[in-house]
Image: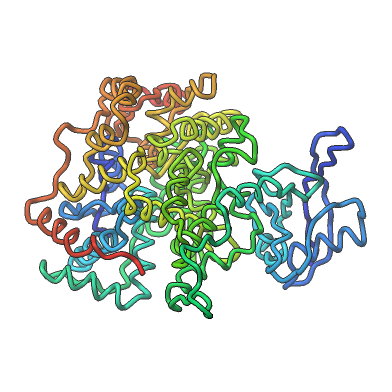
Length: 294
Length: 326
């Protein structure tokens, strides 16, 4: 299973533990990743707000590079996934837009020829590695650990762009992976809602209130922690959690795992190899519950 | 097939809190949730309150929550919600006050639509002995918004309204919401309207276009493909083009664009610094300190693309930036 790996900006910046944990689990899962060091940011929905043409071209450039490598793209971020899927949809059906984009890419001898397969670490776990294989690789089942899934909007909506027609279970993959790792998935309404991160600097109170609501709901339903495939959600749910707690007027103390950290723990990797010490909310209580020392 | 519907009941006059009631009803393969509810009302329980009229997805009366998400009950097949005979959860749409059972008060919805002045304010009188002439393609651009049937599904799904009301906000206050803002673009974009600037300026404030959190809920739930969130982003673009830039939303977008243009990748420290006013920087200090202590501070010199790639990214910006969508 070979992929052109698109780590994205945040996993090279504020969430370097995500980058480290993808790298740590990939070989055990049989994933051969070639990092796309020359690919640019997807634009995260912000560039397309400013100029859809620029966002289309930046992503088409990434797709063309992967096609040159002869590999599908794998990202590890709900936001990257959604933006890339949106560009795939826009350039797939419109010959004029595609022609304009390829006109610009010509200068670097690249051409995007749709379709290209773009996927992400969560989908790869279920659709490429497979849940049975994942279960067979688990060395440290997280028995008794109750984990809430937190998807991130962009990996769920709009469904038409994200292949839900062919794969309607994509909205349940996180629960399936949590269970495959030996944990107990916790259901709560906030799991497919917005973490609030996009409006953090525009409407801080609403942003933190969103994060706080989902965290408290999950905790109220018995979660010992949350798992997310989106580093932007992680920033609002983990790094901003102390402020979200202030807005909600109560302590929260709910550890937030990046998806590959959960997988890594189940595969028997050490917390420090997964950057589990680099969180704002301590992951220690969750590790203790899972019987992980160190 | 037999379908099980778990319906959220509520009668404020009873003094009792909302409760769930389970009904079993026979439905055909192609029958919709509304068919099932009408059967329940006619054959089992005349006290069930629901609102419907056309049964053809055009009057917009029967928007409600089905399995946790709003949509038109007359357009949603029972079999699609319950492929293996699972019970279907039915309840009133969110973010609006419940009058009884599945009927919500649309008053706050209409009050917000009215706030965007949803009628034409012509910039000039029509040409003598003629009506206003508009090129077909300019109106085609607006037809997407005009497809709105005002059912309120987008408002019921809006995560920002949910967060505001969770903090005690009233349904007719705060964020204008997806339906009203999509309607606003319908008039901002109308070539006959003479008040686009005033309209955009009014939307720059609290509760306006910059309060949308980009969650795609309204895009996913709209039964008519209006894609309200996309319209809100279009309003943002038009507001910036019209020179309205004194907002953290604009500062954030500009810093983001500048960072990608320069590095090809995001410089998170730069973005955080430039996305807020000077005063607000102090508010961010505790977070920055927390991240520094946890070893989570983004690197001072962010990941940079190789030199050739940076040139390629610049070329893309130069070639594509001026292109505006039709």
